[in-house]
Amino acid sequence: MPTYEYRCQSCKAEFEQVQSINADPIKICPECGKDTAQRMISSGNFVLKGSGWYSDGYSSGGGKSE
Image 1 (cartoon, rainbow, N blue to C red):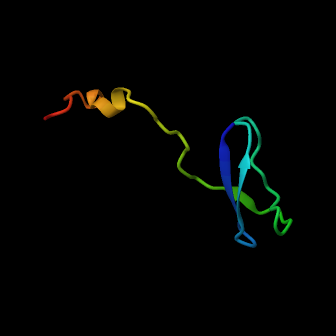
Image 2: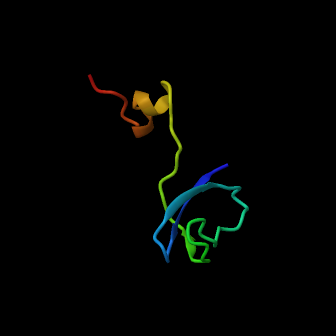
């Protein structure tokens, strides 16, 4: 499940929440209790590991130059 980042527009608190993609965004701030929390746009947490095509240079079409 993805982790979403939120910021409260009232108290400016920032928090993260693990939620299903189908779940509605959280509205209630856990710090102040007001319904002014908004989901922020943030980078994903997708990480490539190992020695696949992306590290060999084949994705650019040119290969590695030595």
